[in-house]
Image (cartoon, rainbow, N blue to C red; front, side, top):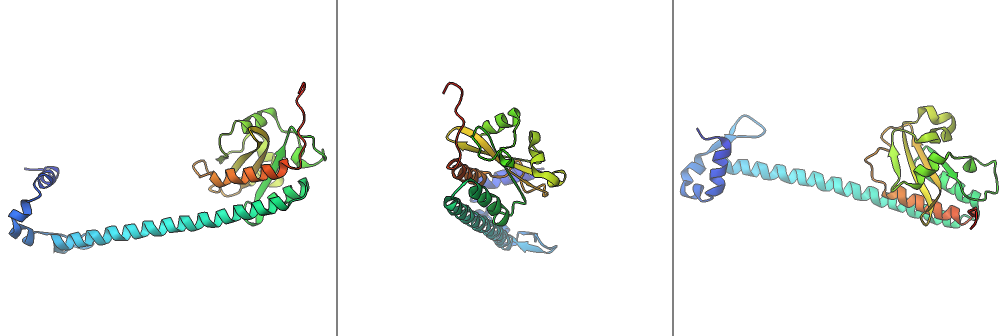
Length: 225
């Protein structure tokens, strides 16, 4: 007895089979995919085409949805850039980044840490000491880190909310190739920042924030420089 694969193979290799056996084609009955009744092969093909069309329409709607989301996100990033350009000092640039990420990007917890700069306010949390391991981790980031585990001491940066946080993102703040800080984001939602998510817009936000902050910072000269 022939197997289904052998029959399918035969029909692929003999495309004229049904032309030579028209009566068989006309009388061939197969089960309807959505019911128990038998239908002709022509009707079954029509059902298959309709099903394929429906799947393509669903995929198109999904792609349009993704496009609309990206357009909205791109607009938010553009508006953030404009507001950062208007910032006239370090405090205003930091406040703009904090408020924009909270209000327009709905990030519930944001922290910034800076190092290697001559800070004007040693009491500000942004200039609190950051462990060497953390600074090295940030410096080596090829792209923003996203995951369900905080890196080194970064979870403590979020204060009383720290025990409730379930996802984190770290974006290096760089001037050229030099990392001088980190933008840390966190959420109680475990799916907000997950390892497989795209990080293009996070990267762009980090670059914008870094550029805005660097305008108002004075780098510490390396010994012997």
